[in-house]
Amino acid sequence: MNILVILGHPDPDSFIHAIASTVCETSLNNGHRVVFHDLYTEMFDPLLTKAEIPEQGLVPENIQHHCEQLRSSDGIVIVHPNWWGQPPAILKGWVDRVIRPGIAYRFEDGDTGDGVPIGLLKAKAALVLNTSNTPDERELSAFGDPLESLWKRCIFELCGVHIFHRRMFNVIVTSTHDQRQTWLNETRRLVMQLFPKKS
Image (cartoon, rainbow, N blue to C red; front, top):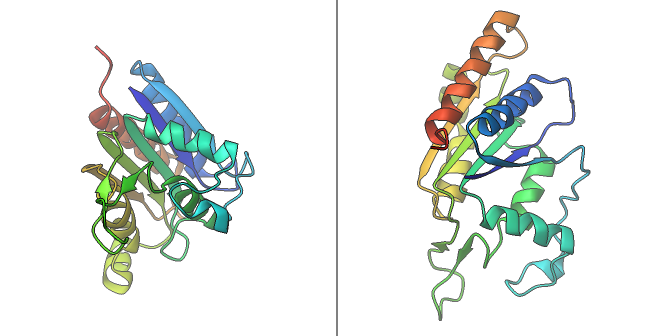
């Protein structure tokens, strides 16, 4: 399987980086091919230009490369912190520029763009791993868990990926070393469950 792993966090010493490393390591040990992008290290430009917006728009070569990797992925893993109920801006920019018409979705012939898109991604499953300093109870009662709606309903389901799992690890700021090791072990199990060892 081709596993695409996208990481959005500026601190290489963060726990979220350890999660991404665990995802990559586990996927490789399972015999899969991994394409990994650390968007901050790569200085990914999140700004969508007017020229890129149409399906047949003028898309820069590096964005085309990201698009082809997304198109050829059998599994997708997104790793990022919960910042104000959203992904970091750099990752939102990746979504804007890479999950684009003709690559991730299209509309029926004659549709003016106000209908329900048809998903084009061939990925069998998507995994989203988040970190947060908000307890689950408050996240649900005060905010309604906006990241679940964003990734599951607004992105992956619309793009044709219907096996979806998301895990929020919290509270990071008060977590112990042992707690973090437990979370990394859980990450390994989730990756092995969604993207089993190659036979």
